[in-house]
Amino acid sequence: MSFSIQGKTAIITGAANGVGLALARHFLDEGANVMMADRDEVRLADECGTFGEQGKNTRFFAGDLREKLTVANLLSATISAFDRVDILINASRQMLTTNPFDPADTSVGTLLDQNIHAALRLSQTVARRMILQAEEDGGGEDSIGAIINISSITSRRTHPDLLGYSISAAALDQATRSLAIALAPHRIRVNAVAFGSVMSASLRDSLAVTDGLRKEILQCTPLGRIGAAREVAGAVQFLSSDGADFITGEILTVDGGRTLLDAVSTAAH
View 1 (cartoon, rainbow, N blue to C red):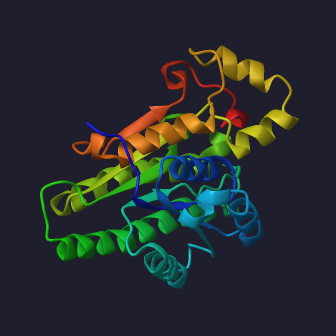
View 2 (view 1 turned 90 degrees about the vertical axis):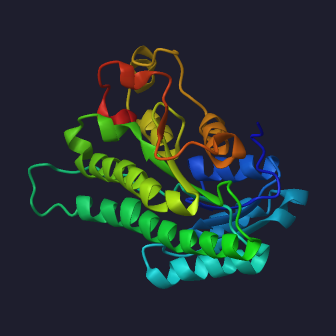
């Protein structure tokens, strides 16, 4: 059984920083071709400039993936650079707080657009390309592609201040399951990695401004530490590889056991 992704081509969204960037670096280290996508063109260019020899296996694409034309252009750029796409990782996430008592609060709609609609549209577009590739390759019984959504343990927690974010995470988990069933006849696997207590960009910002937050997280995490982004990357690699060829529709939790205990402060997510 192989967990190798060497030679495969992956599109990774949200790749300018945080977990998305960690995923891009990990996949490059493992020998994959990587198309890094994000809205922050300057940051993408800066990060790509640090890859050295691995830069030949990397391209970047800047644009707002909430726009249909941008999604199409991202896929076209990937095919132009690498001829195919084998893996899609929807790692672009936005986090906003929600006032649950304010009907004028627009955060729920904003987060659904960014965290669900963009990921769903890109998944549909890339899946069509994967099916076309399989037809050109002559078929077979193995999976022809993998889609991995980066979700959050907030989908299973109750945090009123994170109402919109929690809803978008729960919707992404359900979209993962539904797409897994819809795409299974085409041998495209769809899974998700839901993380918490991992050093993401949002958690780093929260730790900087919230006294006692680190101690609170450690107390509520059975493994007693904050996870590293590379540990999310390892889970994503597994789900992307042939070693997970009979796994689809799963939400793999990477949180040090935190969801097994009572909820922690909303600022920790």
